[in-house]
Amino acid sequence: MAYGGSAVAPTAPPGSSETVRQVKLDKECELRVEVGPNFPLRLRLLSGTAEIFGTEIPTEIRLTFPPGHKFAVFTWYGATIEIDGTTETDYTADETPMISYINVHAVLDARRNLAKASPSDSDDSQGPRVIVVGPTDSGKSTLSRMLLSWAAKQGWKPTFVDLDIGQGSITKPGCIAATPVELPIDPVEGIPLDMPLVYFHGHVTPSANVELYKVLVKELAQVLERQFAGNVESRAAGMVINTMGWIEGVGYELLLHAIDAFNATVVLVLGQEKLWSMLRDVLKGKSNVDVVKLQKSGGVVSRNAKVRQKARGSRIREYFYGPANDLSPHSNTANFSDLLIYRIGGGPQAPRSALPVGAEPVSDRLRVAPVIVNQDLHHLVLAVSFAKEPDEIMSSNVAGFIWVTDINFESKKITYLAPSAGNLPGKYLIVGNLTWCE
Image (cartoon, rainbow, N blue to C red):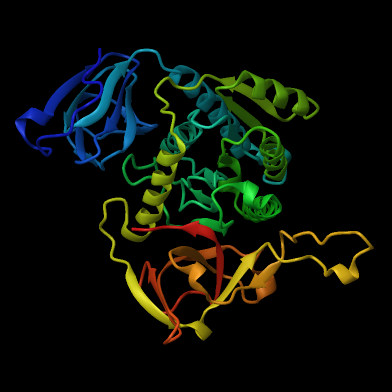
């Protein structure tokens, strides 16, 4: 049964009688919601049990979702939900792939228990390393969140790895990142940011610098490998790896590169039989890798380029202001000479005089080059590197980000927004082409 469809512009904010209604969900059904564009939406569980992307909803606690947010409330045994607010669309669905998803979780949980019971120096002590692949808008991020939250509910602390630099589930777009997940993921706040390990690519697609993307993926995988070697609990819990939707040509090669770099043992293919068949054939020689085909949810919403760009802007804003707009970033000023800004990629690899006759110089995609302050930096997001020297920039993770709000060439000063006041945690900044305008 549908409760709405395309909604008109809201005439009243949440809390008025015309925006409050109840929805009764039968066993193994879900309510799919897209919050309207102008007001937040409040939701609470009145009876029964239900979850949002694998995280149980506490009874009688109101959850507030911001405008434009999309989510689904699923119940295994039946529930009654109260909605307070106007939605763009909302409807109930009784056909979902949740049974197959929870079955995957059960298999992964068994493998974690086997790893925990095995000697720490044996190969069996490594828990499942799950990589979720599929085309754009197939539900990869959502499935990743479910598997992580279900594992955390069982007491595990799996590592979440996000390789989708176009959207950024852990931190802002333009990055690959990893973080341990110790509790089911908050339906509103998202992935916790207590201990993220972040590498800055600086672009929203790997195609802008494929070589750099490969290097950063390998670097992140090696760091996690070292961490697992010294932490039996994390090793047994394993990891869940979310990937981008680029699955053809170079994108397919990058998927194979990620599978190899992280030594993935389970490949979950969402929403495309051709990709499943290709990966099954190319990985059939690896006895320890299972390639599993899964149906994508009917609730997955296709997004065009404009919607994706808006979502990226929202993610960047969340970094500085928080999901609930409750953070207070600081505006700071620095002299041109105080900022050591570098770019990875670009610049000729060698002068023509040093090349064979007729040969053309090619761009060195891994060259770390200093950047002179110029107007092009205006509105760019820069990463603050932990590197101690310029030659460590590419292999170093980042501490955080700043946003350039003004450049004054007369006084030779840059004004930037930072999450907090005080000196930056590193002296080297990395620039790509990631822009943002409030």
